[in-house]
Length: 493
Image (cartoon, rainbow, N blue to C red; front, side, top):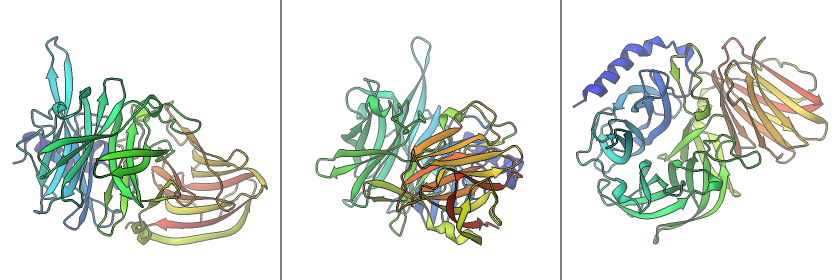
């Protein structure tokens, strides 16, 4: 039976989704039906469709008591909106249904594992929120919370674990038939541990081991863990809070890390070997992955930064969007990310420019727009001191992508994109040429830009707030730069 709170959320969605005109939304990036979204949840394949849930507060465009919103797709690009599937309507999750994950069970049920947040009034009268792990099952539209919730509490974590910061379970079923889950837990020393649990039936769990721990060099609380095998390595994704920068890396405060290493299934132990950022742009957090039926590891993330969320642009009826799903691989010690290949089916008109010389700021015929898939190959040949592209250009607006070949630094800057608040507007990252070139594949979708650098070996994601009338693209160089361009308009009609 649908609870009163969930029914209320569904009715609110249905009544108010028409408040947002289609042109106010991106074309192929997921947004909420109405109001606020953050972390992607429950990214999974179930009964022939991709299901994607997300942290959701439908009633306003600022964070509030967390629900789960829901969209489905057959190709990971175009998404159909489904009614919200979860509301904070039980005693163990009355302060919010936080992040979690999903999988299809052998009996045909869709299984969700999520963090329930319970509001408790302490003896001194203060309010405190306790976090536990909970289960729900459903059919792809309607879900029922498990009568035995919560299935994991602070009693199930090692000594010194926090009852307040214990969240974001990621569940999977291994080849041994058992179910496993990782969850994030704060520790008494102000850091975090990633805990591994196992279960025979996905409802009764026991603690296995600590997979890895944060340190003061890698932030405090680690959120939204994900653990999987990729091209012969085991990968742990985490999203650290309060992380200090290292050179040009990790400047977001709330960052994302790809920790690669090896995993011993007998001892359930993980050995860390290397750490790298997942995305080096302004807006990217809380990634989650799934394995597609054809064996690809695909990731989606919240395309937003916590540092920017207090400044919601005037007139916006929704806030927050998710990245394009990305295919992952691991090559030469690097995480490689590429837009899912399904996007290519939406390519329309193709424009190519070969061996084009750029000096003063110029526009090129056929190169403009706000919804596109465009690749620029910049020849790094010693003939220029700086190269700059400007996207979403108008009389007042632009977002720039600048490359300095001497410093080997790429800078993304949205200071003139129309976002008037004093928030983070630029990010620099070190980018070395590959075979004498820097390659930038740029996915634009009305209110965002995702850049895949050097065949996906680095990425930079940024949201934009520029009026759609600003759709120009210009190129300029100090000296003489030579570029190749291949640009496709993307069509979703």
